[in-house]
Length: 164
Image (tube, rainbow, N blue to C red; front, side, top):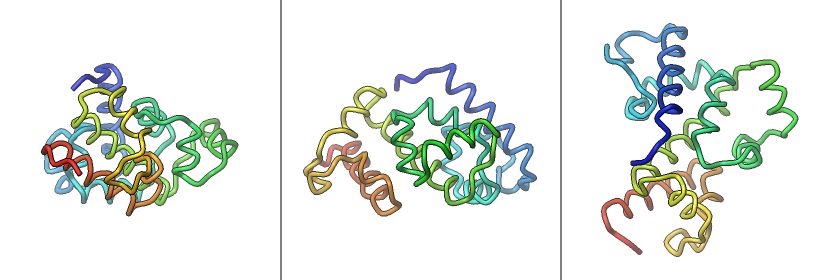
């Protein structure tokens, strides 16, 4: 998989920092170093992080790591561009519902990178109407949880060579 190693290091550092600051019990982090990529394997830890809210600094790193524009994120988070700018200027913490959506989109990106090997191929797939997804663009489906599950399911089928 081709990824930006520098971006991944920054994400890993931010994950470690957030876990350290958020009073999460050692049981949830399994006593191991949690990286950005293996964060999505620990659902209880994710739930705890969602309840704590996500600092803008972490969102900013995730936003840079994913293939989505600021306009896409405004749609995913159901907030205005101005609100997103205020979050940035004030270094605000996202509410749990917004934090959950950020993690969902990040998870789709991680799986997409695993399947396609690089961001450009994944971005092309996201923008192309997909027969198995009702001829909708996968990018348009990840705005809600049910759509995200459909997209993840399709990515899994592609990964295993099961094409519709």
